Picture 1: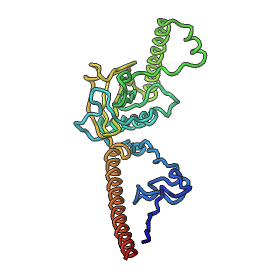
Picture 2: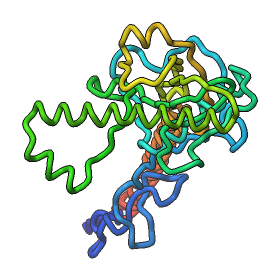
Picture 3: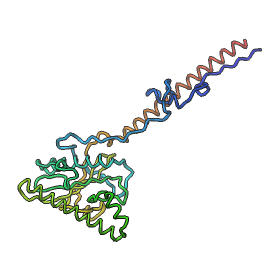
Picture 4: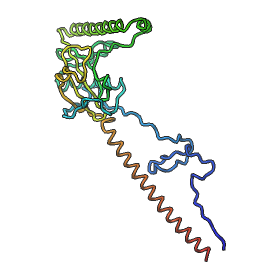
Length: 292
């Protein structure tokens, strides 16, 4: 009696087949299959951090009051925007708040006057310093503060020769100089509009995942204000949804994509089981016919 053996060809036994050159996921309808064309990396594409949509150049993003807070009172496991992206978003939210909620139709940004201009906006009878924080900030970074800036080469060399007390005094002197620059800028802008303006500080905490910002408004300029300070609690004015299109719904879209992939993989697995079942029946039929 002659015996016959039927072996189904598989990709794992093909000679010269390198899985990293045929990564899974080439076909979006069948993410668990190998791609036919070589040259892949064998790794899933790296996710890019979503960029929030912050509205046009007019009044900035639309703000809607909400009872949801951006910050829970402690460090949150939420997405973090880059420093420049957060600063730009914060400035546009601030401008929208001044124009649309405080009804300051003359509110304008002042950052076009000069690079690193000491104050950020003017509106009504006030000049505003804008400071943006994030809900993801570590405990030591849960504050808004005037930025001293990185020392130059000469200053860095001098700092290496200073004692701890001398460095503290040096930084304190720089902080005082920063506040003096802001005061001079206030006088300059006041002269331009022809009346004496007053200083205010507008700060916020962003949560990119929920698209919510907590806004605080203080009289005067300040070197430092802590998120949890009594001053911050007294000057909290409200929380607002700023409608991001790239970050607010990212988790829901990610969950939806995962569900879609899971369903597709389940469909592929079911199809593979059906195919193996058919092949097994054909094989059994052929073997039975041969034996006969």
